[in-house]
Amino acid sequence: MSTSESWIDRGLTHVASTYGRYPLVAASGEGCWLTDIDGKTYLDFLAGVAVNNLGHCHPKVVKALQEQAATLIHCSNYYHIPSQIELAEKLCQFSFGDRVFFCNSGAEANEAAIKLARKYSRDQGHNERFEIITAKASFHGRTMTTISATGQERIQAGFAPLTPGFKYVPFGDSDALAAAITPATCAIMLEPVQGEGGINVPPAGYLRTVRELCDRHLLTLIFDEIQSGIGRTGHLFAYQHDNVEPDVMTLAKGLAGGPPIGAMVAREKHAAALGPGTHGSTFGGNPLMTAAGLAALTTVIEDGVLDNCRAMGAYLRDRLEQLQSRYNFVKEVRGRGLMLGMELSCEGGEIVKTALQRGLLINCTVGTVLRFVPPLIVTEKEIDQMIEILDGIFAEHQEKG
Ligand SMILES: *Cc1c(COP(=O)(O)O)cnc(C)c1O
Image 1 (tube, rainbow, N blue to C red):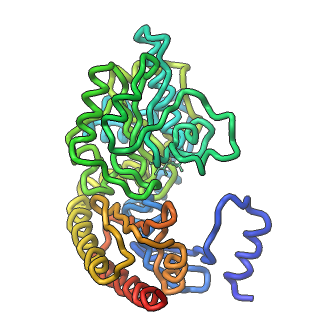
Image 2 (spheres, rainbow, N blue to C red):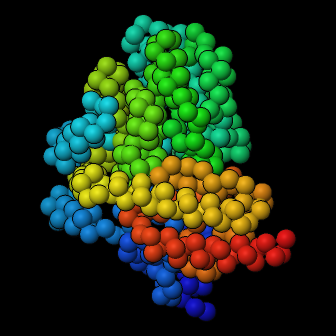
């Protein structure tokens, strides 16, 4: 047995079977490259599902972790934590927000946003308001309440009863959204670009209309930027493409460049709803993760990462569109920045498996959409290498018919 095979065998025996895993045993990573336990290297265009925005083991993230780990790893939120304060300041400086609640994952950030939206309504004297409208094909996490917020039956199947108070409308349809608002509605929660639902970009003007509806009906607007945020779309936050600011925004994935962290950013008025004792997290905002977050966020903002994301996003899109013009099973290329999807007229699972064998990591959402979310530091050369592998697979796929 190779080293990989024996690890896979052990992994399939005692680790929970919640994931359908590919036969790769991860050992190390650098930049856009992941190396397995047998020494084979892979070009990583999945980046831990949009987590490794700065590539694997970015030196500045590594340094921040090492220094903080040797200084102070954990400290209760009963006390003030400098790196947490600095990260909150930076997030507010570069967004619409005034205050940040820290947690450890995307689902937890959304839980905080959902609690805030309900509590804010109550505090405004609207006791009848509790309902949150979300989008079909959305993805907001895997806890009981966040699967309830997620507008996908396949994610909810088997877990009833769900948390009450969620209603789903087609993404991008402002008339359907307007029609769904009732006196019980307290908030609207959307991804500015849907990730797990297939890289769906809303039509121009949609987010602005959503903002206007929220203003008219006094609803809290929550943007789930857990995947689209931290530079992924070429702006620090995806809402900046449309110049439409939410009241609350959730972040996680790329925020610390790898380490686990979640955050909810809110305007002062809304944040006030979660006063002392209303919410919390033991690990949330701990010194180690927020030190990594501060290093990663600073790097994204100051080291030309956004410029590279825009340039490489345009280049990758162009190269994917060239493939589209040559292969008739490619229906559409869509997305923003380095959050791109390629919709196929067939299932994409086999293509993903073949890509893995040939040293390329990508994935496929909703069965037919190949997803490309490489590190934002990806180079033209790496994109060319990726396209070459994909082109080879597509050519064989076309032949097979
Ligand atoms: C990944 C993701 C989540 C869930 O984040 P976890 O850290 O897995 O809990 C929520 N919303 C969006 C848009 C995501 O992409």
